[in-house]
Length: 151
Image (cartoon, rainbow, N blue to C red):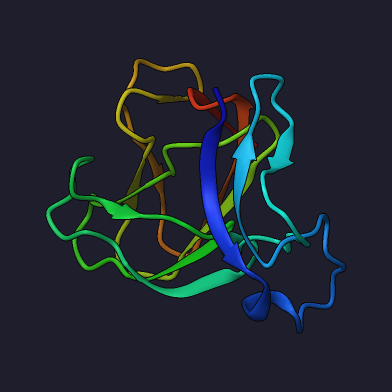
């Protein structure tokens, strides 16, 4: 059973510098059980929205995993982290090799949580790692939909 990774619309991606990777007017990016990206569409599929950078993230005040700010871009810049432990979380669906770069430009450290039921660095599920102010954390998925590793 394939899992949906995101939706795209051709009009949103016509001006990208990188070429399309399949064909679709609108489509859903999906992963097959063989951990390959497949495009279940009728036309040309373009790169998904998350290939871009989000540069105005406010980490969730008071922290915690459940209500943490949900990351959706491969490069994410936290601009507001007012209290130590304010939080963000990684996506629910990902495939091996997916790499997220998180930059903290806030005043305090931020907690980076995995999605509920997943883990980072083979620690117990749902435990966060921290990104200090002025620092960057790079995470790469090592097991589809379950495990991230800091680089």
